[in-house]
Length: 174
Image 1 (cartoon, helix red, strand yellow):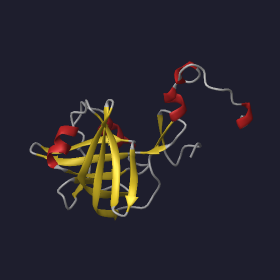
Image 2 (spheres, rainbow, N blue to C red; image 1 turned 90 degrees about the vertical axis):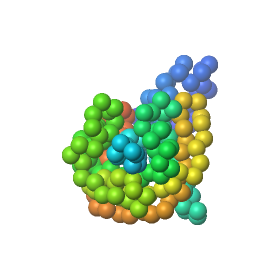
Image 3 (cartoon, rainbow, N blue to C red; image 1 turned 135 degrees about the horizontal axis):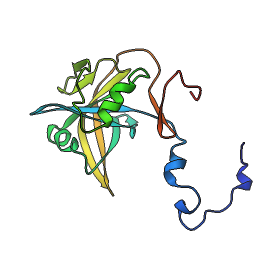
Image 4 (cartoon, one colour; image 1 turned 45 degrees about the vertical axis):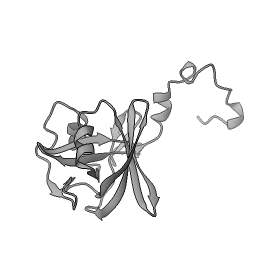
């Protein structure tokens, strides 16, 4: 059922009074990426769905990461990262990088980007970046990256996050 714009009522006092923001934002499908870097202890990485292109000239991307992330200090110290864009067949890898209690890189075929950051070899593609700016917004950092290299690795469809769940090309919603 579609609601016409004219039938929308003005918002109640506060967003959550009508519909929780998380539910509304869940209607926006997002791709998922693994943000990875090299640390003194080895590769580090985290799953994000807040990744986007900012500019093609100069080539700039951004991602958001929690200020409580245990991975961020390593990425910040290295000054570089690679963002691997996950394919619909990489749900298991996405779940490993989403959890914090596992060896995230175990069993994950990897390559190394120019900056030394790990890249997931089975991803659709990646961008290799130098951290160019970090802004703090409430409980997240907004990390801007200058794109130094970009490569397509594989063909296929992306792994998407939609309505609080993974969606693949086999799902009827896609």
